[in-house]
Picture 1 (cartoon, rainbow, N blue to C red):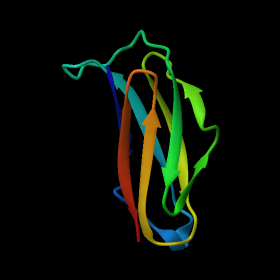
Picture 2 (tube, rainbow, N blue to C red; picture 1 turned 135 degrees about the horizontal axis):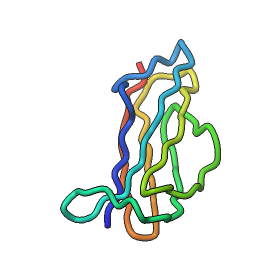
Picture 3 (cartoon, rainbow, N blue to C red; picture 1 turned 90 degrees about the vertical axis):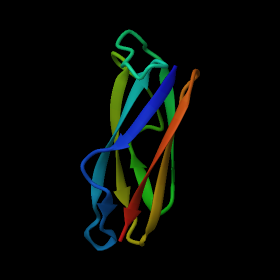
Picture 4 (spheres, rainbow, N blue to C red; picture 1 turned 45 degrees about the horizontal axis):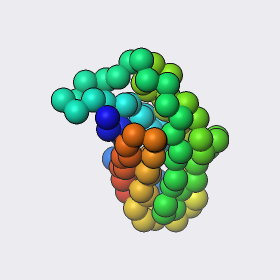
Length: 96
C-alpha cells in the first residue's frame, strides 16, 4: 500500500494574501487503485512557510481524507508529508 498526497488546484500560494489550500490524501494499492476499505490513521507534517489548519493526526475514511494548510506570510516552498502505518507521501507547493 502507498499513499498519495496532492494539493488541490493550486501550484502556487500567495504569501501576501494569507492563502489557504486543501490537500487530499488517498490510500492506493500497488497498481494505483484507491483502497476504499482502509481506515488507517495518518499523521501530517508541514515544512516551510505554511501551517496546518486542524489536527495533525486523523483517520482516512473510505481510504481518503483532506486537510487545509495556510501561508504564514513569507515566500518559499512548502512541503507536506503524510505518514501512515503502511506508507507515506509528500507534495510541494510554492509560496510566492
